[in-house]
Image (cartoon, rainbow, N blue to C red; front, side, top):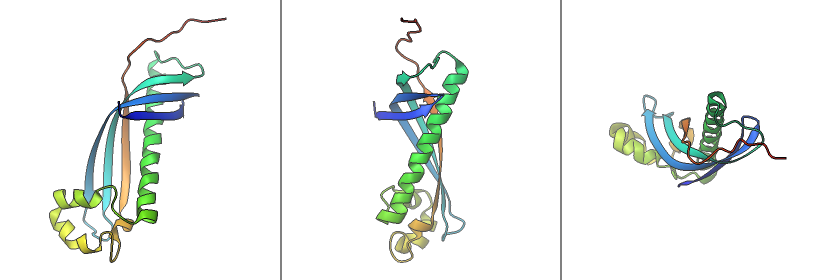
Length: 146
C-alpha cells in the first residue's frame, strides 16, 4: 500500500487505500518560454471506509467515486505544482530531468534559465490528468441493523 486518500464523493465521506500509482509525463516544447507538461497519473485504490449510505455494488456509484477521486488527485497535483513554482522555485518535481531525458535539444536551450536566471520553471504549465480504478476486495455488508 502506498497511502490513503480521503474525500467527499457520491454523497459520503470515503477513505481509499492507494495501492499503485503510475505516472507518465509528456511535454510540448515548441515554445521554450512556456513549456507545457501533461502528467498522466493512473491510480489503483480500494475502498477502506465510507460514512453514509453508499452502495458500492452499483456501477454508477463506483464510477462517481472514481471520477471524484480523480478530480481530487488532479487538484492535489495542481496545488503541489503551484507551491513548487511560486514558493520553492526549485525543480522538486523533476520536470527538468524529464526534459533532459526526453527532449534533450529543448533542455539544452533552457537548462541555464530553468530554476535560475529567467526561471522558466515558473512559466511552464503542468496539466494533470488522473484516472482512478477501484479494486474491489473484502466484504460489503449490506445488512440493516437496528
